[in-house]
Image (cartoon, rainbow, N blue to C red; front, side):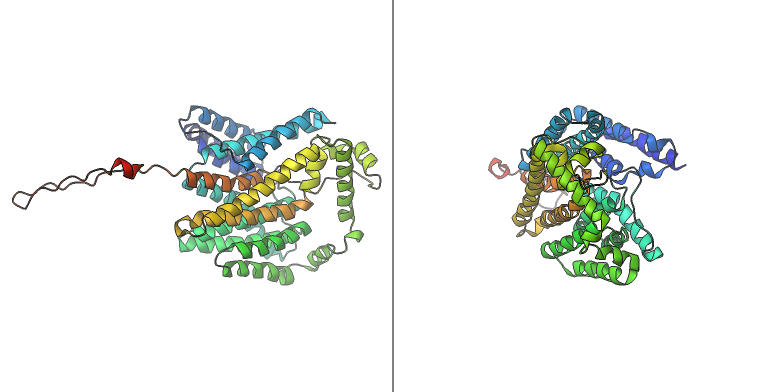
Length: 444
């Protein structure tokens, strides 16, 4: 029944996507971030859902009469160069049979992110995009928070299987990135019940991060919390969120959770932490051998190469770091483009926040810029310990300030409409003159 319902929703959305391609960007976000089809157990779980949505969106993009132009922003240029460079490194990959499938998925992600940038051309669409990103990831935050409360932290919170957020560490990083976006919606919602609901979702998401048992997520959450405290308005909500996180960690989580978190300081005695150091050694040595293009996607699966470049490692491992992942797979050039994308998006968000700080009418853009910075801080800190370099959510978040800046620089035209003229009642004074349009100078 679940498969039939999801299939019906998908099929019914395709004609709308072709007519209004920006809807395809929204559906793509749901499919790529939330992965609802992976929570089914029948035919829909293996159906090419993402391909159908992307194809319909591209058809709509071609036939739509909307203006379709990418802004020449440095963040956009870096993302396009990064997409080009991972394609080059795939051509020279040491294991092209392994690298190509992930390149195929990554290049589709870059394409849809840029399509989204071209189509999200109004504040309403931008606000809707943030809502969809929050609901797609926040669903697992709320569910995981309730699970942590019910079990007293006795179970580990994980994401949907066979997805980029399937394991506990990746899901926790995605939740940390989403918390600031929840705060943005909390600040911008006028409805009291929506604000209360968003506050509750933030608290449950914080508990879900604890329930993931992810040590990297704990460090990222601390960094994100302090940056959010600096950048947010009305800080009492942030203090309440921090208190929820601290109290949950101290009194709700079991002894096994505390024992695992204590290994952060005793990493020399932890096999998992030492395995990360082996993977990082492999990535650096591989980049030294192939500084321009690295080894290609998933080169860490080559066991013989891994053990040759990291002799002390007993087995080959995942990179467990966005930085060493890009370094090993795409060389120093790829790492430079990736870091430039992250840094430029961070400064773009800060510039947007400062630009709108003095105008109450632009509070939405000010809050969006500030919370985007917080989200990027969470990603930069949490990503140091997991492989999420080509995660859709990061690139959509990085482009939020670019979209907002374009919207501010290109406001919708004001359509002048004359005021209606009341008909003259006989015997009651002279007829009123119709309102004249404003002068050409006023319109210009």
